[in-house]
Length: 102
Length: 239
Image (tube, rainbow over all chains, first blue to last red):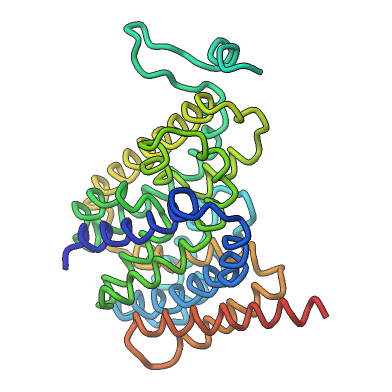
């Protein structure tokens, strides 16, 4: 399974989500019900992915997971709606660099 | 405003009658590119560190969804199966269904090729800029605006990711690079935590993802449990 194949398959699935209501069934009532049911799926998915990514980072580098958890917390504290994503990412990167240098 | 006056005020025809770019679309997406470009560059660096730069670059415009791409690459790196990865991508991109519903009236009077192909550009940014305007009711004007915004974002996204992938080999494989996938998810999440049902969904997702299962299963379990918990919390808040 190549990276391109995975992304292409993901692209096909995503195209269905993007186009279904435009091409096949442009019904706002149906869309509203689907959107309401899935409203919290994205934050829950991101939270789960953050956990698995933190444990993977710790496993890959051999550093304790708490160092990554603290860096992730700093990232969260510096993130704001509408703010450039580079700022919290740099804050997290700086934190984990300091914590793992001891 | 008529289609012709729109062309006169917002369109720019190339010297040889080439494709016209919509100036309003360029103005609207320019500030968004400042935020998108570093994100794409980080994905490029991370892909390079994982040895997946070529596949990631080749596939990025096919998927055209940054957070879903990070999720997919992260799960590939963790050894998840294709079904788990696609389910995660579908759940993360489920919001596009709602965006498409809101944008459907703009597509209704478009030619078939546009209705089939142009939904590919439905992302957070294009949805935001279109719904913030009230002068896109003309079919030709919307088509030009939509294609300009979508293509410009795609070009900048790919360029920034390519830059990141090229820089990747000279960036040492440091803990800061290993942190990036998790940091991106956290940076997306943090601003939503002031909303109680979202916070409940996130907390449940975190707890469920700690269950000792393969990575793909943990993500699906966390997503399902978190989504249900968020809905229940929203219902409780309304009472």
